[in-house]
Image 1 (cartoon, one colour):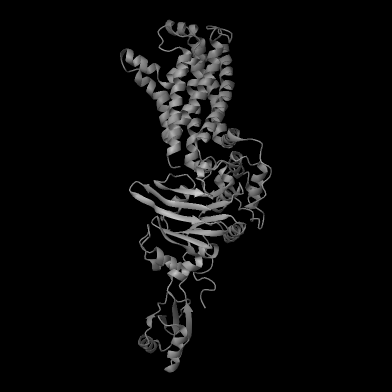
Image 2: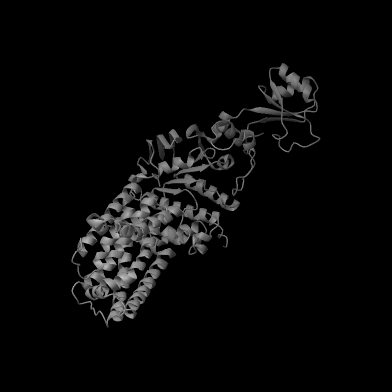
Length: 338
Length: 282
């Protein structure tokens, strides 16, 4: 259980974290989401006692991090992947950490095996790829078999297999009753991993709810209607009190040439639209109730909270990959579109 | 670089073997020892210390002998009065620079590589980590320092033997030779403290070298008694007095007093480094 109360951190004039309060419950994966520069890493560093807050407190299982006697046995953390001496082997990096906690050498071998680095354990980490460094960092986080895991962008640099592995690992650890707090700026990744979401923008809390509720709350439901007679249908829908807008090509999935024009209808449900069309003998090619994708919901919520980048939300909403992160499924969530 | 072996799926994370029997501070000492021995800069700096110190001891004492007849009588008298400081001064003057660099690196490399965050996550109270690092590093430098000062004394004494005989049994000599190793250990901590204060390797090394090599000649330019006192109380000028067998007539500080002054400087810097470590964001 992690609790942040009114956490505030300023760097010079800039407020990185602004009176942020939330709690992270055990037994589930809590995603910590926000655009780049929203203050996710800073918040994690405040929880871990690396940075001092200007005001507010952060506790882990009721204790300040600095008051934990053997902290790595309570909390495992992964911050930047490259935070190791390039001349030191992965084994020695983990060994010196293990020794501070009174953990035996055999535990180092165990976690190296767990992350699949046994064969390169004695090599200097300077030659490691980002993904391998990330695995060393994950091994360090797991070293003390902690009840609480704080992971900052853990999938960065991992290959698809690695991403799947870390995802399953987080779920497994959460199912064992541990507290898993994982940050990402990628909504898609969180959609398939997190049970609960804490969303921040510009250091402020935007949302703290279950992943399902997050989408439910922030997305507008609409019905996608495709018809060769779209113009006439749009008028009829308007007359019935609905709102029909032409669906732009970019938003439609696989919207190719030769297909009928699409309408995005709100304020009317699918059966009613079908009845209207049938009454006037208008042919429908498609009639699909939709929820906005998680990515869209996220963009909508964080629009106006972007610290960096001038692009509009629409551009960001494309599931274009961040460098080094293989993308999972497209933006829509399985089961949310019918 | 070969790619990582595939991850082990389904392996349990929660079987911790029996803990090691160590407790408290001894755990941190073992950990700092692992850190220090597992990077190449340590090994290379210490090998360099041995080679440079022995090499320059031999070279300078040999040059002294070569030019013995042509040299100034006053200088000859000084060498004959205290051959130990001539011997120790010739090699360690250069050898000590490797300790300055290593001392800075032991601390600053934690910052440049980001390891400091891992270190502080493991020891969030921070000061015990710094204390353990100081103990381990000082002990290591002391041991290697004694390993280099005694042979370099015997080497220099053998070369000087003809004109300025000296033996370890002479008054003050054993203390001076052992003291030179002590001086290196404290110098290591001095550099470590500056590394911790400045946190950037290049800047910290420049700072230490300025103290050791630049400040002394500069203060000698200050005229009169003030200049003499300022010079005498400079950290390394004071600290190096421990390498004298005898105190000279008009000297401001005795060998042990000088060493004490150096220790005081180092202690103050370590306190500042500790304070900054405690309050700064890592």
